[in-house]
Each structure stands twice: as structure tokens, then as C-alpha cells.
Image 1 (tube, protein in one colour):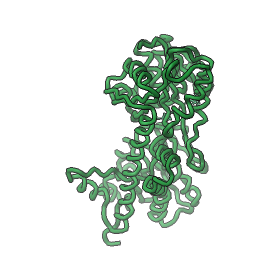
Image 2 (cartoon, protein in one colour; image 1 turned 120 degrees about the horizontal axis):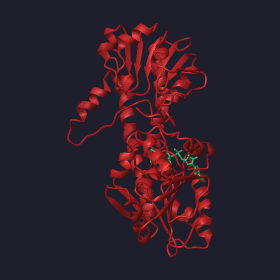
Image 3 (tube, helix red, strand yellow; image 1 turned 180 degrees about the vertical axis):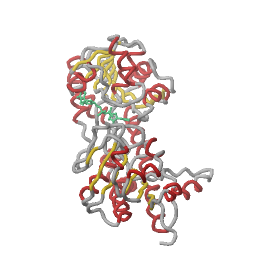
Length: 427
Ligand SMILES: NC(=O)c1ccc[n+]([C@@H]2O[C@H](COP(=O)([O-])OP(=O)(O)OC[C@H]3O[C@@H](n4cnc5c(N)ncnc54)[C@H](O)[C@@H]3O)[C@@H](O)[C@H]2O)c1
């Protein structure tokens, strides 16, 4: 099958790179978003997502009009749904955006079209929720139009490269739908394309992220027991990983982002009685921000009135994505504990946390601080010279929640350094 036009619904971290990449491959793309601000910004040439190369790629697609923007879908050969799927307060999948996107497609759906769902969803969403909505068009899923699910597994910071190079799983509601999906993604995917059924493809995505969540939870639990036992967990993990069949992940202040901390809940919701391990892993990872705030409080001998330089707010290094970030929860806890917190997030400078002061430079953040806390291992923070920190700061406490600062240079600059997962041997 050949696709001459594609309508992409949702122009966020996944949809905008996908729409721009499709446009580059010679397909006419209609980019749809319900957020007028997103559309206005794009029309003015402002790309609302910090992702290397995306600005240039999207600009090229917009300038050449191979990508055009609208707040509602248009007729096209294929539709790609890439809208958010958050969890509700009680950790249930919020599918409202997916269902609204499917409803918006209905008036434009024609015989022979392909609809691809890319949003991460609970198992059976494509079959049980999306297909019935699309069938309100009077067309039958399968006989009249193709319908398939494809999980997205790109790494923020490397999205444009991984979109093309990663292996891609495509699950159809029938074999012809999977094949139609393969024909669409072949337009830009160099990686292997693996076909399966829709529910398996939905489950694949959830297994991938749940596997990572559980393994991060193990590393986090190891970090807490190492603190108690007077062991350096980073050293212990490094040595354990010399075993040919062991690959322990890195501990940290918690799991954030749109995926790893969210997707396991979709499996819990689908099979609550069969997921004790998944639920426990979620609890361990969700407990890390509170544990991190306790470490900071202990390092400072109390929080009240202490000035803290909080380095980073995003959920991972060298990107500006703040969604579900443990750093934000930690800062909120420090503020609640009475500390005067100054934050600096170089990749999202407007980012702020209630009660904390958002600074625009590392120097201003460190100025007069009692403690410097490494929340996110952004390159510039990891490379911070402790002597430079000492010049700006009043106190001499450094707290490293990422295992990224070498202790010796900090000690040499006069600091007491505390690292998550590092117990005091004589404690
Ligand atoms: N960000 C990632 O790294 C990543 C990786 C893998 C999978 N995913 C999954 O991909 C999906 C999209 O995630 P994202 O990070 O791109 O989200 P996002 O929040 O960055 O962007 C989603 C966009 O969709 C728009 N939108 C909401 N409802 C809409 C509708 N009915 N019609 C059109 N547009 C609508 C929003 O305004 C927003 O601009 C989610 O299910 C997510 O779990 C994301």
C-alpha cells in the first residue's frame, strides 16, 4: 500500500517528530492538535519541545507546507493517534484523549483508510475502545478500514534518530491491518518491523516499561539497604555487573516521565490480582523522593531556614521534560519542610515549583546556599567544579542523588558530601 497523506493527531513529544519525519519522507501530513497554543507557537516557528534537530526538521516541513496545521482532522489515507494517556489520581488509565481523537476521525474516515494508535494504552484498547468508536462511521474495522497499534519506544534526546533506527512492533486487528501499518512506517523506519496482533503490541509496550520499572526498583532498594549497611551501592553495582549475566540498573531519586512510572499501572488495572511485584516496584520507586528529601534533611541537620541550591527539575538528564519528575516532588518537600529553595533547570528555564525561587543561572542558584543538591545529572551540573561552588556558597554541604559527583574533589574543596546509596562505613 502507498500512503500519500497522513493526519497525525497530537503534536507532542511523539506526534511532532513523527509528523515532521513523515513529511520529510515525501508524504503530505496534516498535523492536528487541540491545544491552540501549540498550533500558534508552531506557526510562529517556535517549537515547544526541546529535542535535538527537531526545530530544523519541523521548520523545514512547515515552510515547505508538507506539514500543515489544524485543530481538527482532515481526510487522509492514514490517521496516527499520538495523544497523551496519563493515569488518574487513583492510577487508572485516562483514555479520554484517545477516545476524543478517535471520535474526531469518524467524520473523515473513508473505505481503505488506515488508523494507527501510537499512544501507550492498556491491553485491548484498540479492539474494545477505539474500533467501536471508529465504526460509528458506518464502516467496519477490518473489512472496510485497517486498524493497528504500534508502541513508541524512542528515547527523549535521541527521538529523531531512534524513530528511524529502532525496531518497530506493529499489531493489527487482523493481518491485513498489520501489513498496512508496516507499509506506512516503512516510509521512514530503517529498523526491523515486526508484525503481531493489536493486543500483543499494546502489551509489548507495557512489558518493556514495567520490566524497567521493576529493575529500577531493585536498584533503589539496594541503595537503601547499602546506606544501612555502610556500603557504597554504586561501587557494589559496578562490581556486581562484572558478572557476565548480571546487569543491575542505577538507583536514583525516583522514576519520572510519561512512561515508566505510568505504564505499569495499566497492567495493574487489567490484572490487579496478578501483579503484586509490579505494585511493589511502583511503591518502592514512588517512595524515593521522600527518602531523598530525608537524606537532604539529615545532611543539613534540619531544613528550617536553610538555603538550598536545587540543581535540575526535569525527570532525566539533558532534557527539559518535567512530567512526573521526582526532582519536583523533592523540591516541594524541602519547601514544605521550611527550607529556602532556589531551583535551576537549564533545559526549561521557566520551570518553577511553588514556594521555591526559580533562578536563571547556576551561579545565582548557588549564591549563599547552605547546600548544593544534585537532583538531575545534567552535563553541566555533573561537571560543576566544587571550588567554584565553594566560592558562591555560604555552607559546605553537597548532596548527590545521582551518584555523579566524585567525592574527593568535593571534600578537597571543604565540603561534607552525602551520596544517595552510600552508607557511612563507621555509622
Ligand atoms: N514522550 C515519550 O518519550 C513517549 C515514549 C513512548 C510512548 N509515549 C506515549 O505516546 C503518547 C503521546 O505522548 P507525548 O509524550 O507525545 O504527549 P504530549 O503531551 O507531549 O503531546 C500530546 C499532544 O496531544 C494533544 N492532544 C490531546 N488530545 C488531543 C486530541 N483529542 N486531538 C489532537 N491532539 C490532542 C495535546 O494537546 C498535546 O500537544 C502517550 O500515550 C505516551 O505515553 C511517549
